Amino acid sequence: MKDYCVFIQTNHKQIVGALVAEYALKRNSQHSDEFDVQIMEMRDYPFFARHEGEPYLRDGVKRPWLNDDLQSFTPTRFLPPELMGYQGRAVVIDPDIFAVADVWELLARDMEGKAIMCRRRHLTKGVVDRCFASSVILLDCAKLKHWKVEEAFEEMFTFKRDYMPWICLKMEDRDTIGLFEPEWNDFDKLTPNTRMLHVTRRRTQPWKAGLPIDWRPAERFRLFPPVAWLMRARRHLFGEYGLLGNYKEHPDPNQTNLFFGLLKECVDQGIVTEDMLREEMRQNHVRHDAFEVLERTPDLAPPGDPPLNLSAA
Image (tube, rainbow, N blue to C red; front, side):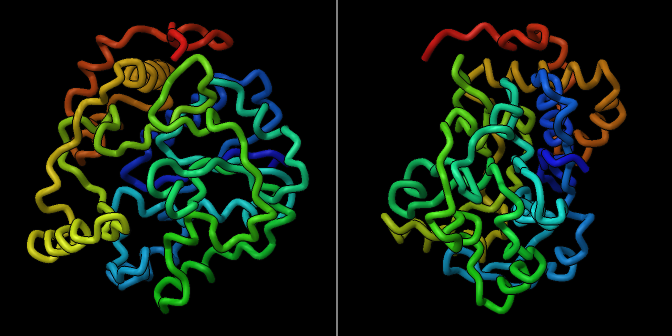
């Protein structure tokens, strides 16, 4: 493995997004020979399967661990220092994050002695809870030798560790965390300044429109606790995904065009095959009209140019 690597977290439900994310990283970099890209599929790490159905602590609430949940991969974001032998640099991204600029600029930047660089979460999680967005993190692996993921994961099931503070990086020394420009993790915003687009509003992810929702909402709302009581009652009465409805179309057609433009290139190059897409559609991982959307999606501009013609926000 090279000294620089981008790791993409995923599970079986998000594998198409992960493959598109991998392609976008290499497509839009003029330094793609300087770094590796590795997809971390959670099923490759047996400690996840051992805890299927067991209660763990999430934001103060005990909930069953479900490996089939849309976001079950998230603890893998702490694996890269171990995987790199606690040396070199890593960028870790979710499978719904797509580079539109050269990720090498992030990998090679001056970290100013910090172990971690990221941005803050937005809305309540960022302002009230002071949560960092670990969905895109730049890591100096030599400074993170205390990251031992299997051990930390096990602690969630003995209730010594809460998932939310862990994911929010609140268990790290604040002095070791630096902030990078929010455009490296642009939440549902695609502008000429965007470096990496994060399609973070799960309900409107472009490749899921029309499918039944398969992610579990929060069950703690500090600003209005009665919402949490209702959400817990819903789960107990109707099941994990009961009454949650279906995914919707993304309100920004540019973001839909970016994803499907990248996917179209992946299909043309055999990175994602038509047979694979059909199987993902059959399993309700990809919207059932994906081929029709691909047909009407305009081609992206060549690598090196902005992929879409965007006006400044």
